[in-house]
Image 1 (cartoon, rainbow, N blue to C red):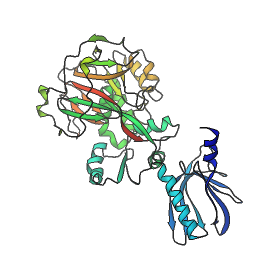
Image 2: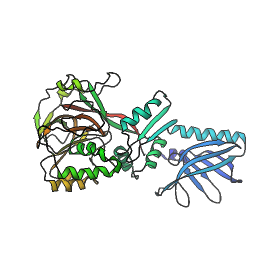
Image 3: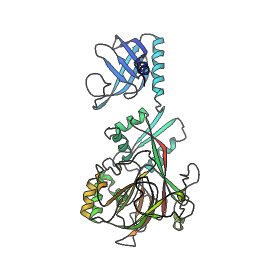
Length: 432
């Protein structure tokens, strides 16, 4: 911005004498959204970051509702502290001044693009409802009201953690709620998981093998909260499973040397799987997924056995698992984390490094970016009568023979599935 633009931002939009606690003091609103009370104790509020809203009360008073850092002095500096709710009340000296202050505050807050009406559902750690149940049972009744914007803050918090970590903010419910209220936007890739005419849209991850088994089979320990994942991971490591199968993928630039070349010869989005007669069908309306020409891409393949296959759209899988440290929100690629052929002790060490993403440096881990992906799941090596689970965003989308049943009815058959990516298709509320 040029110097003239900077001066315009610092110039007052409105400056007036108002009453604060019965004392007349100067109050100024500047072009950069700073609201300054000038008196014996100067206060400064940033409308974009600290002010949540305002209300005109009886007696011609205006109440500013804000969150500020819990410390002495001016509240518009950059140092981080604990956030607390505060209200700042002032009274314009005339009706014309009251109308003018109300209009200027409203105009500036509206210019930030914040949601006008907001409904936030919280599903805290250890909550018994999945995201799908929250949507169908709690959120769906409000969908017909076009004026309401709806947000669900769930249990795993992989998406919330990724957004807050990218902004350098602690992962907690209050920071997540503030990000939604402030209304900043961030583009997000969306993956389309297809099998025949059945589709599932994913924003977080897809897993098969060890990670899927831990995520889904640990549901029986949900009363433990997030600790259930660590507890069950230890059980699965010491009773390690290996899965037959194959993966096919279109590598991102720089990853063309992984796997063996192959030709794309199947179209799971156009042909029904023979096993799919018993799977749940979806109605064909609305967005049907990417129309990318897969046969024109350069495909590679890797065969099992596998310990785990994990596709990730954002860096964090949960609040304390950085699954894909190089993942970006809208780069048009999914991050593939593949594990095969490792000893149990090496796996235990690798799993303990997931809190900072250094597990991807293990020689037993293949970590690449892909544009499209096909999973052909198979049976367990140790017992061919048993198969596995395909998990996406915490939901079972396919379940093979002799697996943990749970309460979720799978959308697809335990057979070949295809994943494509639409760059920046979704929009998130995010910290700036």
